[in-house]
Length: 148
Image (cartoon, rainbow, N blue to C red; front, side, top):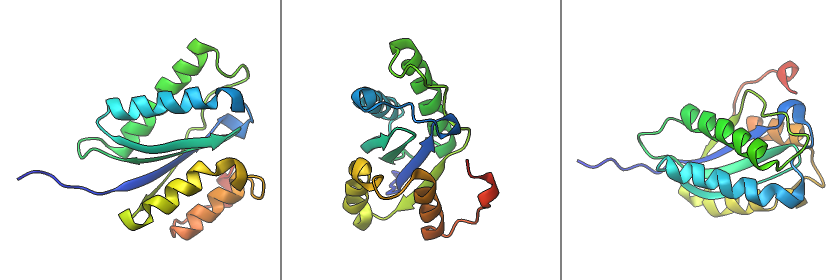
């Protein structure tokens, strides 16, 4: 029998110390690169977007790929790409953790619109408040003292 899956993830991670280093003029290059990394892992990217201090990825995982391995590969290879291409002068790497949230296929289009509108969204809410809201909405237990 063939394996069938439908798992849509929203993956969120921030720059080290949430430094605002991802300048708008070069972000699309980074996002395109990340989409390529995901495709090379046999996964499917719906969208990648973000602002100065963090990014969001909406993707489907291939059944043979673990979430942790995918995020690790994205972070390592994108750090190398940023440094090699000199995309963001003050970029010091990614924070060690990440958030990953699952969605149903019925929620996919709304989720994609949300991620595509990050610039607009963050005019009203900072990234820590956004992360707090995502954790609460997905009923994930967390401790604010670890927020940074």
